[in-house]
Image (tube, rainbow over all chains, first blue to last red):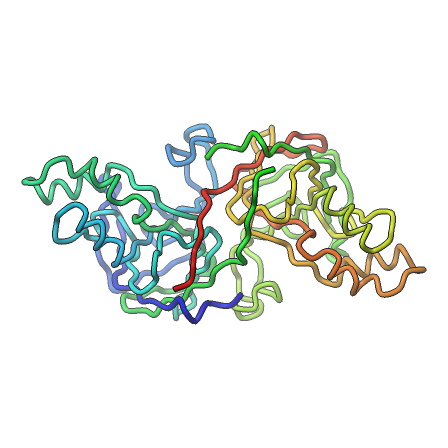
Amino acid sequence: MPPSPQLIGRAVRVLVCTEQKTFVTRELEEVRVTFEGIDGDRHAGHTRPADVRTPWYPKGTPIRNTRQLSLVSTEELAVVAETLGIPKVLASWLGANLELVGIPRLTFLPPGSRIFFPEDAVLAVEGENEPCIGPGKVIGEHHPDKEKLASRFVKAAWEKRGLVAWVDRPGVIRAGDEVRVMLPKPVTYVLP
Amino acid sequence: MPPSPQLIGRAVRVLVCTEQKTFVTRELEEVRVTFEGIDGDRHAGHTRPADVRTPWYPKGTPIRNTRQLSLVSTEELAVVAETLGIPKVLASWLGANLELVGIPRLTFLPPGSRIFFPEDAVLAVEGENEPCIGPGKVIGEHHPDKEKLASRFVKAAWEKRGLVAWVDRPGVIRAGDEVRVMLPKPVTYVLP
C-alpha cells in the first residue's frame, strides 16, 4: 500500500543527543539519517546491546538496532502535560528525535509502518516506546513544586510516549518537513 | 511479551541459494546467520536495491534489507499443493530459506514478530511474502502435464506463501531446531 492520503503530518522539531551523560535532546534545523540512524546521535548504530527493553536476550548481546530514532506527537504530549497538570512536556525532555504533529494516535502506528520525508529519508516503525522513569525525572527537575512527577509520568504517558523506529532509506529530515505515513497490510493473528 | 508457549514449531528444512541465475534453494543441514542474513545466500546483505516489491521507492535505490530470509510453512504448502492438484510444493521451488512446521497460519504472523532458534539466532518478521509468478514457473517445469500452473500458483498461494524476515540476532539455524515465536504487542490503528 502506498502512503495513506489520510495520514499526512509535519515534523515540528528535529532533535539529537550527542552526549553520553544525558538522554535529553536539543533542537537542530535538520539532521542527516544513514542506515545507522541520526549522524552523531547517541542511539545511532547498526547494532545495540540488548538491555531492559529486550529481556528475552542476554543483557549486552549485540542485536539489531531497531531503536535508532524516537518519535513523539505534539497532540499526545499535550495530553500527557494535561494529565500531569503542567503547561508543557517538551520532546527534548523525553530524549525524542522527532516531534510530529497531525498524525492521530501516533503511538498506535503498527510495527512495519513507514514514515516518509520529502528529502528521501524513510523511517520504519519498530513499535511503541514504553515510558520509563527517566524522562519523568527530567520533567520533575523542571517542576520542583510538583510531587512524584517521575512516577506519575510513566502512567500518564502510557500509550502516548510515541514510537521507536529505524532508518529504511537514508536522507535528510528538516524541521517543518511534511510527513506521510504508509501502514502495513493489516493482519490479525489469533493464537491457536 | 516473551515467546508464546502456544507457538512452538520446528524447522523442517534449511535452504540456501548461492547462485545468481536461479532463486531455487537447496537444502543444507545448517546455516549461519549474521546481521546480513544467511552467509553466502543470494538475498544476504545489509541493504538491497528497491524493486517491484517496494514501488514507493525509485527502482534501484539502496534501502534496508528486511527481506534477508524467506520462510514457508509445511501446512500452508500442503494446502497450495492440494489447490493446484499436485502431490507436493517444495520449499526449494519457492526459493525459501526455512520450512517451518507447527506454527499455525505462519503467513499471518504480524510484522515485528520474533522467531527464536536454540542456538542464538532470532529472526524478525517484515511481513507476508506476496506470491509472484516465478515459483509458479518452477512448479510448472516439474509438472509439464498440468496447464497454467505458473499463473494458478499466484492465486493458490495467496496468503499462504510465508514470510520474509531479517536477522535480529546472529547465530546458527539447523534442520530439526525447535522454533518459538514471540508476537508483538497487538495494536489496532484505525484511520481518522
